[in-house]
Image (cartoon, rainbow, N blue to C red; front, side, top):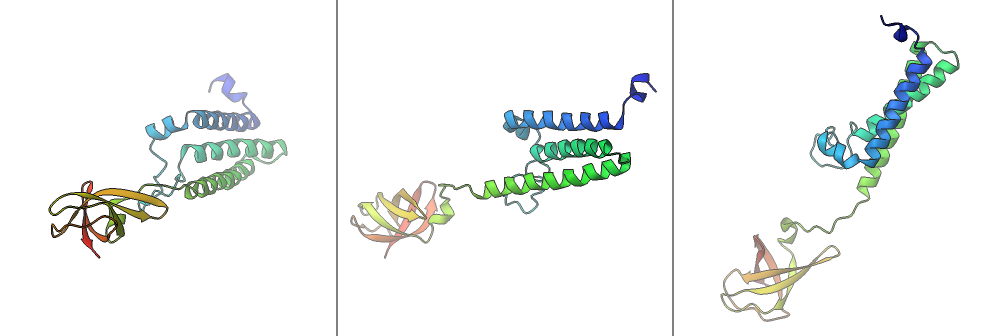
Amino acid sequence: MPEWLSQLSAFGIFLAIGAVGFLFLLVSLIFGELFEGLIDTDHDADVDGDHGGPGFFSTRVISVFITAFGGFGAIGIHYHLSTLSASLVGLASGVVFGSLIYGFGRFLYSQQASSEVRTADLVGQSARVIVAIPAGGLGQVRCQIGEALVDKIARTQDGAAVPENSMVKIEEVLGETVVVKRQ
């Protein structure tokens, strides 16, 4: 065994673990998106595919776990706990602080809003014709989905003309065009 390795104390090892975790946390906070793209771990714990925020194995959660493990392990050694006891204190605190960061990340993710309108959201909606639809031709309709107003190019299902300001129902979506039926 190298001589420098035998001179390391448990306190120094715990501090080094905490410092490495903290350094990695700082780097992941500054360059986080880079690491999340290289190490696609943010959604590993997301087994049902809903992608509801960061996963338990996200780089930030792991960084906080390592930092808390090292820091609280060093505190345990400082208060004359055995190495095993200090490791258990570090493990417990790492789980607690990692869980807090995980929960906070999930909370923040759930607060996001999106103005994205999926095509499936349009089918069955009522819409107003804002540009008349000529017989066999194209016009334009506007419908409201949540808070968003959506304008789409439209044609009728049976090829009939529909005057401006008429109400129609969206039957299907074909690419960027909707097929409507007069109400």
